[in-house]
Amino acid sequence: MTLPSPAYRIVTPRLVLRCWNPGDAPLQAAAILESREHLLPWMPWAANEPVELSQRVQWLRKCRGNFDLDKDYIYGVFNLAETKVLGGTGLHTRAGESAREIGYWIHKDYTHQGLATELSAALTRVAFEIDKVERVEIHCDPNNTYSAAVPRKLGYVYEGTLRARSLNSDGSTSDSMIWTMLREEYPGSACATAQIEAYNAIGERLL
Image (cartoon, rainbow, N blue to C red):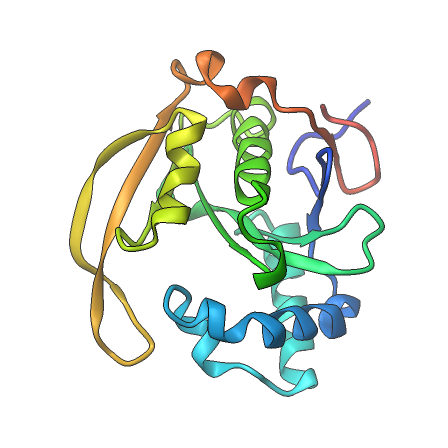
């Protein structure tokens, strides 16, 4: 009998999305260091980088623990050979009951190639078809036009902009755009035809 969700490993035409493991620390550290300046305007946590290896390992252990306990689902974004970290993403539970929020960042050398769109389409499919949620959200800074283009391409609906909602690394605040897709909207979206394979914790195929 196939175990239920979550999907621990998701394969798209160009990417592997999988639950972080402590052993990924060196690859993650390299990707973040190489992309730090690119990430700083949009990702407040980048201001704290680089961190000690032991601290990174502890954070990755926490990610894995939260994944196993169904508290939050944070994924590493890898190339197909899993030799390089191309970014990070997640199906976050902070959107509320029966909902997920997709977040993402992409390595500076791999931006403008449609990878954020590809992984967001895959996670949207997982959220609706495996996790059986009723709503998926994507939040982004209004000034991050490339990030805002992702939900627009995939058929998400722009609901509005929350003012001074996100806290920046310097203590200032910024606005946050909210994009959503509801279960009844999903079948007609580009996400529904995304090419993916999804596997559970013991390697059984879910999609």
